[in-house]
Image 1 (tube, rainbow, N blue to C red):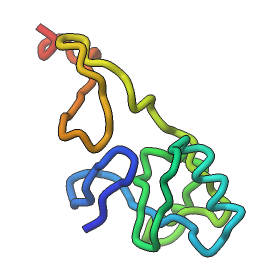
Image 2: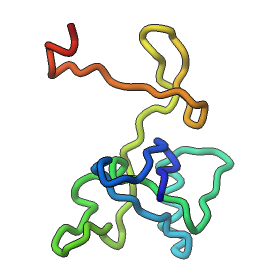
Image 3: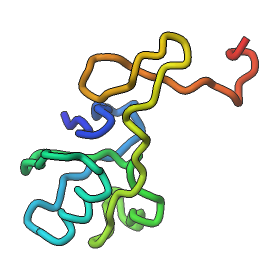
Image 4: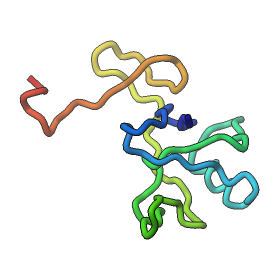
Length: 112
């Protein structure tokens, strides 16, 4: 089972995301991925993955049975990992064991 190294989403049949390994053998593309992630002093290994939430829709090849990344795709969608809880003001930091969720603004019954 894969886990996204950025948002810690775990791969399951219910998560609705695909998981993609870092291009560790393509040095130039790997540098682009790491630059977009903005993580200091972190290096991926051959099993490190990012989930599809960090890629735009045009990065995917959906013509076959499996969803795959196009050859030169680079992840560009990264939320600010240091956002703050609106209730307790705890900072969101990946790997700290806290989960953060967005308010369901499009579902008024739940928002009540």
